[in-house]
Image 1 (cartoon, rainbow, N blue to C red):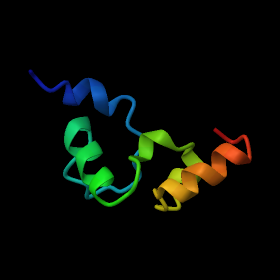
Image 2: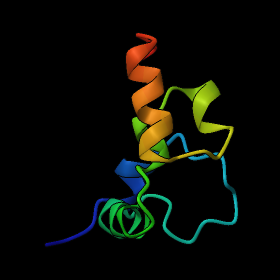
Image 3: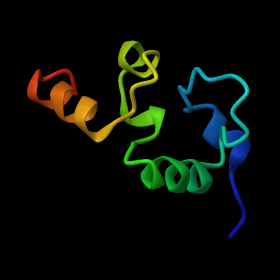
Image 4: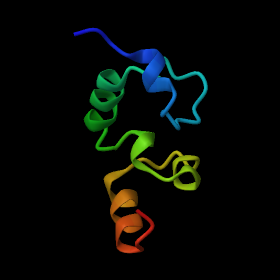
Length: 67
């Protein structure tokens, strides 16, 4: 399957500029899941910028109805 990196970048809210996985969603997802995290696109902009991509942070945001 061909990667749609350019199209994916239009919706990528990752604020970590040196990230080599930007726009390559399959690699990003694999990387973060291996670290018990979710990719930045699962978080609102303000929460993504904290770089806390943990499952626990996501759950707190869901409980607070911010997601």
